[in-house]
Image (tube, rainbow, N blue to C red; front, side, top):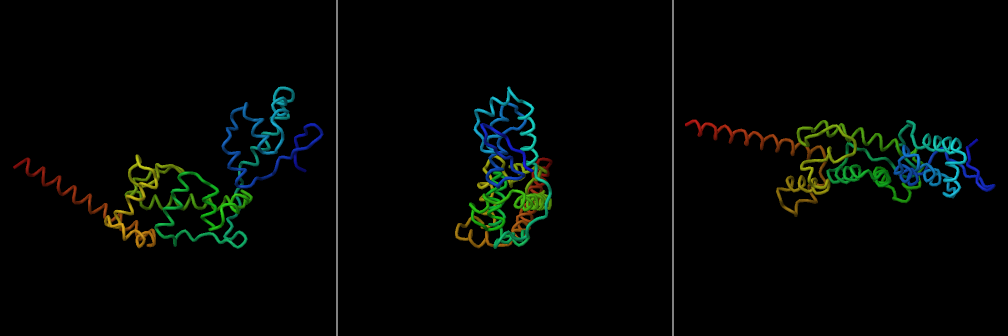
Length: 236
């Protein structure tokens, strides 16, 4: 039986789970801030905010119990990843093109969960927002883990630091936006030729990363060689 907050002879149930859209909105609230609890319960149940604010002083135990149930619903339990949701099939991450990898990476850095789910399953964004978060989220967990493993594989290329969904794990110059930094990488692959962009972004992402890693190694070797020559000239 679901717990419900009763206000003026009307019951407002606390769901066991939420849609992706509702979960994202609730996750923006700071559950550690007690003065935000009435607003969180209101957002979770649809109950009017006024009586919930009164409950904070008149029946604090009830509000505490309600917020604990909301918190429990927000904490996602581990469920099996869904390879298919309705007619939408989960992407095979290892077959991504460079363009697909970049698109997912930029969305992940911005922590746009609904857009990431939409992209991972190639489903309409409204469909992704309406999904039960417990069904959709395992794909996010799987993607995040896979994404970190890719960056770890190319840590010399991207100066990788093991952080979660932040610009710290995005490529190159951290003063750039992630999209801009990726554009710089694509232009290196294109040899600066705009007409080659379409070809480059359609190549397998690992092929592109391997070439960039090779290029960076060669540039470092050339830089070291120049330093050695300069040192020899100074000693001459």
